[in-house]
Length: 293
Image 1 (spheres, one colour):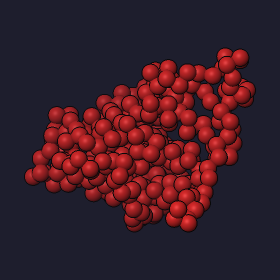
Image 2 (cartoon, helix red, strand yellow):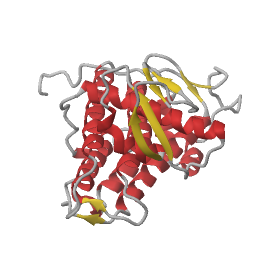
Image 3 (tube, helix red, strand yellow):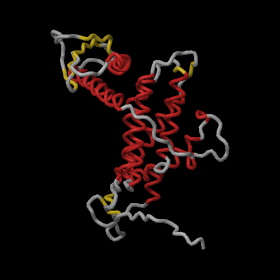
Image 4 (cartoon, helix red, strand yellow):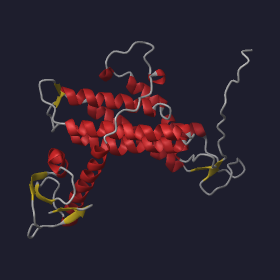
């Protein structure tokens, strides 16, 4: 009627096969009941599971384990939300998390650029995997651990506001893949009053912002450092509750003093010294070109 093409692009999916590569059929009995999968793993879990095994242009090698992974991911998002919702806020406190906030903002924008590029190339599975890693690793495993207050202590207002903003943007990214949990969380009063039409499904997607590459790259080194400290604790059977001294012999341009509070908090470090020589009698390790004792 309008004389216009209704659409210009068509997305063709591959055939859904079982993990052995066989086409699903009733005669083989290898075709799961979708409603039973939803009952077991949740609708969002099944959606994520299907998309995780859906490389663009290829057949889908379906394995129920992907749905379990999707359910676990939904639980991760829910538990992160419960953590943030449980924080007590004190607006009078200064913000000690400027570095962590700046890093995650850059990391989010970096991931957003990758996600948009994947969408442009119809690589839906890759877009989801980038979001998955952003949420599970960068946001939950690192950012929230960096900023969360000590047990039964309040959080400052600036960190809380920034964290809620990050969480809202994450819900927007997740919504096409996990519409049910994201819409449920979107309307929680933690984000303030929303009117009837302020829904996640029509919320504007986040826009790319500034990416401070050095902040992202330096934090990757800091994360490796913390992982090495934790690894040494495991090898030496040292309790995570026992604070350890750390000496650093820097050969790179990274300013570890900027990240001192994060290293001490996540590595349970009692103090950091900067040494010109190897510390005698200490366990040593390298992270890139820098030496740690």
